[in-house]
Image (cartoon, rainbow, N blue to C red; front, side, top):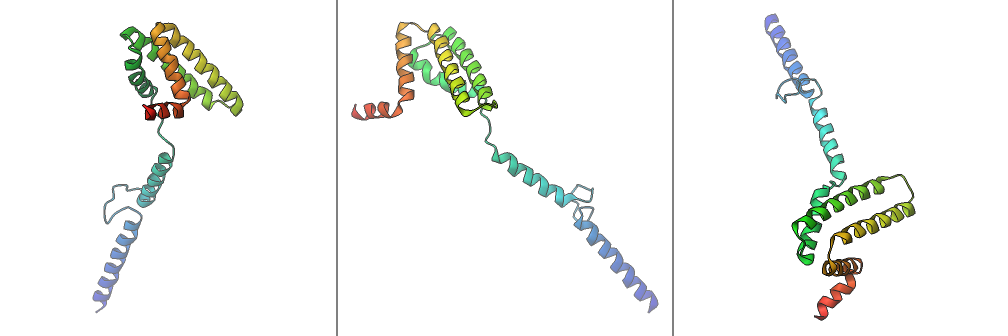
Length: 157
């Protein structure tokens, strides 16, 4: 009878030890961490992922320039040299604009700097265009600044 009691006590101690260690990620179900904080680490990584999802992904400059070029190239009928030169100008402008937005200055100062950058970019692009392309470029810029007017024109046509 004494040996049966001691066997039961040993079995109970061994089983309860296995259950306790499994709760900390050391055994039982083999979660692979083996450091005693398996479930806690999984929770932290899930929380880190939710934090990174809060920030919007930044679109690469090249993608933005590509979209702009797809829009203006057919309308302005640009040759390859113009496409490359304008793409370079737009890339530089967008990178500079990103820096201006992130700068620690007042909102008015940011707006003024971005306006100057936009005018400079337009002037550089205009230097690369011929007379017909310049007229179309100016019209495209006006249309972009006043989208309501251009939609009403399309509806009336």
